Structure formats: structure tokens, C-alpha cells
Image (cartoon, rainbow, N blue to C red):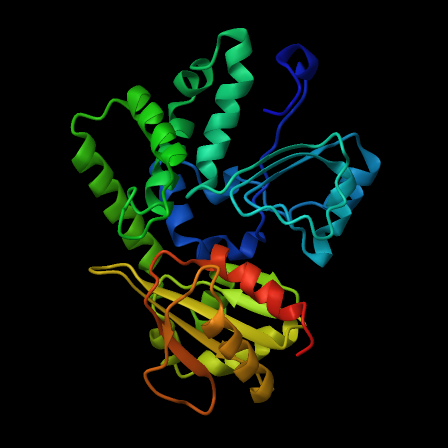
Length: 332
């Protein structure tokens, strides 16, 4: 759905495009698991490298809705003139904002972007008194929205403090439609299954792990792992894969973010660069950062990288990105 009313979009075709290359789909283990449970397989999906998006947009009347991000990478800047809607749960960043003034934006800091997607569907349907029609007509979508909110907010965990009242409101709304027999066990079981799927990276190489959940901020590579960084770095090919990925992506710094999901949650971080002076400066900058403080402690030293444990369990990449951007904005 998009910002136009139903009578204005009649005949339009809406195609969800996954923002990964087809060959990398298997890296999204929790995504492949969830889709498979609903009978959705790789050949049913459209990936960003399936078509020449730049040529397609230039030669057709296609429009773009951005979901779960609003800061375009350099390679995706060509999308900007065609963006008519943005739905994102990250803090608003107007740096380099080149979207048309008419573009509709739903940007709100919540625990899960699916909260905003569900809210947007409700909002577009309410004026024509059909706010439940979509969710009832497509129960698979309702379940996948619910599943993603459960996973991203860790079942509304107060310990990790990722969920907001808006996340809880939408979760309860979806459950009023799904009607599980036992709400508490339904949520717990779903979280356990999704967490296990996300953490199962035993078949992935170090290079694949780096690509599994990767964001690039300027010249900084910021991968997130569903395992501890310490465990990743113990792989014999880890540093070689890291340096290769840095070169391939034209980056010279990396901030690795890890988490242990089974049992009590733990988080850790490592900063790496062939330029050890720059890595040290970024490490100190992150240690001193207060918006929020990450609670970084160094249990020991390694000449190849700078490693920290992280005591602020609610701080995710969403909180690291502004810190990294601030570091890049000063002369280092």
C-alpha cells in the first residue's frame, strides 16, 4: 500500500524487493526460516539484483517505498528521485536528504520497523472503514509482522529495553486477530524458534557472516553477528575475511557487533583497522560516547584488534551509527 487512497491506486502493482542479492538470501537464516514456515521460498521472491533497478526506474513510471532505512548508500542514491514513501524506525537523519518534498515519511524510533508498517496499513485503511480487512485477508502477513516484532524486541523484554508502547500496542492488535490459545507461551515459543534460526550460523563462512547483517557508515564497516564477536574472531579465517571485505567495500575501519542470544544475553564489540592509530581513536571515541553510553570494557589486549565487552545490553547498531557518524565528522 502507499500514500494514495484506494481509488487512486486501482490497477497499480506493488512488488516487495528484498534489499539483498539473491546469492546472499541464505545468510538471513531467521528470514528464510520464517518464510519457509509459511510456504514462501526463494523462487517466490524478488531480490535487488534480479533486475536493473536503475534502468527500470528511468524507463517506467515506477515509484519506490523505502522500508527500514532512510539514509541511502552511495550506490543507491539513484533511488532518491523516485521515493514517494519512507517507513523507518531509526532516528531521523536529514544529512544528505534529497527526497522530494511530497514524499510521505513515517519515521519513529520504535523497537521494530514492522510496528510502523502495521500502523501504516491500519492508517490507510481506517478512513474507508476497512482497517481490519487487510490483516484478516492476509493472515500470513499478520503472523510475519507479529513474529518480527517479537524477535526484534526480544518479546518486549524490559531487560533489553528495545520495545516501546507503540510496539506493544501493535503486538496486542495483531494478537487480537491471531487469537493464540495461550498468549504467553505463544510468544515465548515463537521467540525461541526465531532466535535459534538466527543463531544457527554453523554452515556459514567468516566472509558470509560478515555479509549476513551488514551496514556501511561512510568508510566504516558495521556488521552485526548473532554470535559473540569473540567467537567470530576465533575462526581461523576471520581476520583475512574481514580485511578482504574492507577492501571490497572501500572501507578502512570496522566496528564488529556481537550478541549471545541463548541464555542470559551478552554483547561484545571489536574495532579493527590496518591503521591501528585510527582504530584506537575510534575505540576511545566509542568509550567516551554518552548518547547513550555503551558501557565498553576491555578485558585484555590483542595487537590485531581492540576488543570490548558491552554492559549496556539495550544498545544496538541503531545507537552505534550516530556515534560513528559523529566520529567521521571530526578530523581523525
